[in-house]
Image (cartoon, rainbow, N blue to C red; front, side, top):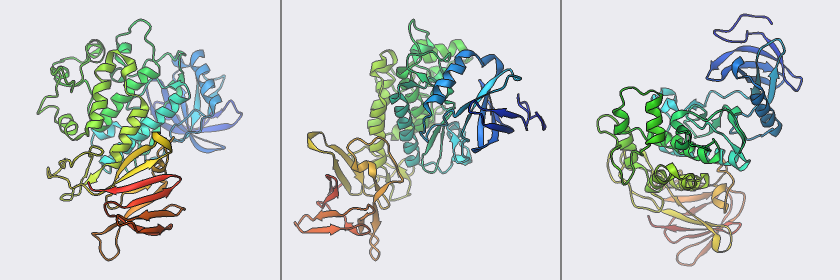
Length: 453
């Protein structure tokens, strides 16, 4: 060991360690600490990386076995800072693991509640995209048969500009049915875990509750059970938390029980945000936080969140008066602008149908200026939404800005049929004029019809 000891850290700067793969890494400095250990920046053959080093009392055989399983999977999903290699040294009383560094463009979700200037670029579209990417990340994890067990706002980071996400602290994830020695973060835990019901263990079903709490925080800036009852608590100790989140949880917008409604003047943010949330998302929150509280099988699945969030993202429209983005109900009427309270005019919409036979997937995309079609719009059941894979873009006419068209950004030929029956070809780079009744063939059996709002 050499160098100067880092502030309050277990490892000194300059410490050289060796991974289980035989690669030497050097500690550069302390990044931060948490409930399980400390995270350091290290330098190795792969360049700068992060090292999580456990507190000695937590560095037991069970955690070592969990890490071995995770490292052996070598999962390359770019939405997860996955453990790459275990790091240990006989002269030290603990061990840890190496993972990729988190890029600086990613911020923690509590920054939204703090109104941190670093996330001021967040918009309704980027927040819905963040929610969608988060849901798809956990859907991918669960599809591997892995439960995360500690979904919370401390483990998901987001880019406020485009909604990209990174899931961190993945050393808590274990194969469904195995023990990890962790139940979660109290105010995100499923009620049966908070109550310590006999036989209740963390798993994918409890993850679904935690995921819904995370989504509510992300979109509402509030906890789903923190209403009037929370304000009456004088000391938020463990006993009070167990009652609020476990033994007597009550959703602030339970349609039948109103005792925990948010209090005007004290909890105005959630009142305002719930008021502008599209009904398709409200209904999912109501179901998971009423029926799903005591019946885990009634909790909203990741695929349901994915489909609803994707549809809401496609229905976001700008206010013609103040320019702010508004979430509209997919296929529904015009919302009132959340900012200026004026009615929002709805543009034309494109009814898309993808796939074959009677099970074709149908989507509506609002054709605002600058709106885009993506590769996932062309798929019957896309594995992942990729908002860099643009295949079409709503653009303005070069000499008549009020006239909009759909520009072909794909590599294939489109075919267009006007309402009067005239047929045209739309090669890559060319634009199809948008008028009600226009029918488009976009390739691979994907069809679209332009409709009035």
